[in-house]
Length: 194
Image 1 (tube, one colour):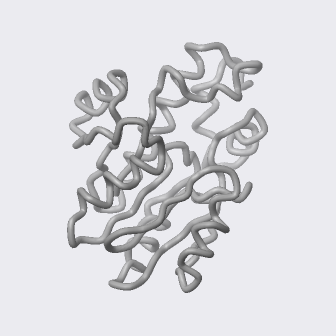
Image 2 (cartoon, helix red, strand yellow):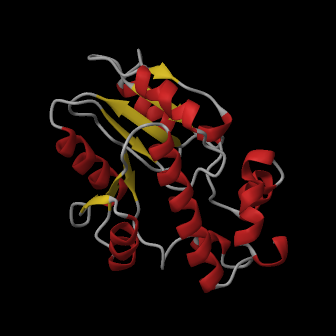
């Protein structure tokens, strides 16, 4: 399962009014660590897609395999690297900031992957937190990406569950995650519980 991560140092800019820079780095790192650990607990090894030096150091420290994303390709380019790395095997591209994700949800997504089937998981705000399949896929990440992805593959297997629905993009997302038992661990990674 591939986890694209642009950078920890530049992550969570939309939360700058609530969290200082070191806190945002800590939060992004903790979220990625959680997601990678859930991948491992589901029985698969994470493949980190990033060219960022801080992510490379983190990957190496944890023993995670890493590939560089395409220059200027952003999330769509990183996802394309995941697909090319998979060859003829199934692939799953997963957001790195899913605090409520559990191994059973990943196992369910992975089990749904069969040749000719695409798996899509929406976020609560219309994004796409997980995409899986075989071979090429027309990635179109950005605001409202779930509907673009679903329109591209209308017979996709759609998974709607808490672990995929809630990614951390705003202070409200963080508060919602911390208030749920699955995301309560985040309290240790935000100053004064903010």
